[in-house]
Amino acid sequence: MSDLLHRFRVLWDEIAPVGRDADSGGYLRYALAEPELRLRAWFREHADARGMPVTEDGNGNLFATWGDPDAGDAVLTGSHFDSVPHGGAYDGPLGIVSALLAVDELRARDRKPLRPIIVAAFVEEEGARFGVPCLGSRLLTGEIAVDRAAGLRDAAGVSFAEALGDRPAGARTDLLSRVAAFVELHVEQGRALAGTDAPVAVASAIWPHGRWRFEVRGEGNHAGTTRMGDRRDPMLTYAFTVLAANKEARLRDAHATVGRVSVQPNATNAVPSRVTGWLDARAAEEETLRGLVDAVAAKATERARRDGTELTVTQESATPLVAFDGGLADRLARLLDAPVLPTGAGHDAGVLAAHLPTAMLFVRNPTGVSHSPAESATDADCAAGVTALARVLEELACR
Ligand code: GLV
Ligand code: MN
Ligand code: MN
Ligand code: MN
Image (cartoon, rainbow, N blue to C red):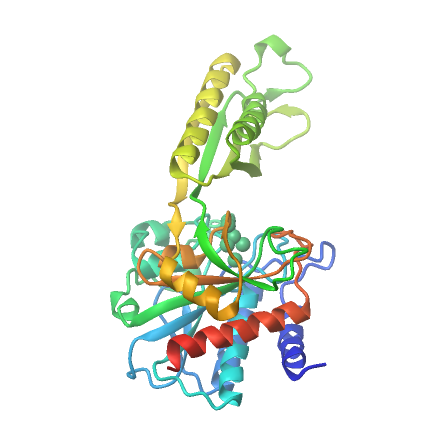
């Protein structure tokens, strides 16, 4: 086994059990909750062991710096530790582990950073606990108001400010203005590289996407005694909305998913009083996405009228089209001899791209599955990812 493969495996085995659900094999690593807090402590230990001081930005994001912090504008890399419920092992942590190993690679080759290399662990990238994806990077860049972020609550009613132990600090232009570029390495989340001979790709763009809450209120009632014609059943409106979302997405070559639903009172023998479904919608162009969501909302509204229910649609998050810095993407693709491809998945890199030259590297995923325990990457491809990231950091920070 090559030395790098071995060192990857050692680090990976340290974090692999943390937050792993024995039944599903997936991960329950919610931001600022126990397993994720352990990973954050692990990150601090590994940064310390490398002589990389760790700072926190007041928003829950961690930064470990290699090199003289005053030597010039930094090159930022890293990703996130949090997962979706029962998520895969690689989405997020691979970018942080690879960054630490890339620093080791450069050190082993006696490369010195002429400007600091900072490894970041962003908080709440998935939005699985507080509902807004990329919360940490949105706070850092000022893309979400502090009051709104502070008041976001998890399913148990704990606010983000409470989980953080303080009010978030919000926009940190002092930190951002000292960063020259951000490069996030991530497992590929589709099948674009599976079966090709490329273990690593460079990202060109992220589809515009967002989350919409469809809340349908009806009349809770007895399942046995309420005549069918007397019902105001929000489940019907909800079910129709899911079908409409699927149809409208297919018509446009877009993606629509309702992966989360909440039912009140959630009893087998009661007509529900309220059903809330969360629509995740994504498309290659903004206009297509708007058309998709408008069409779903219009159909759901019409259906609610027929069902005698009340529908409210609330947009919870929005990420516009991200076109990564074309010059940087081309430069990295040439450096790595790697293909360039777009993705439908959101990332902190997508948020930072509006503020800094930003790039992403994707590591091949043979199953093409993500946000699921079946997400995968071979150790050899992960090592190739580390090698690629080390070359990129060398190019951007050591010359
Ligand atoms: C985050 O991974 C997202 O794309 O929703
Ligand atoms: Mn994810
Ligand atoms: Mn991710
Ligand atoms: Mn993501």
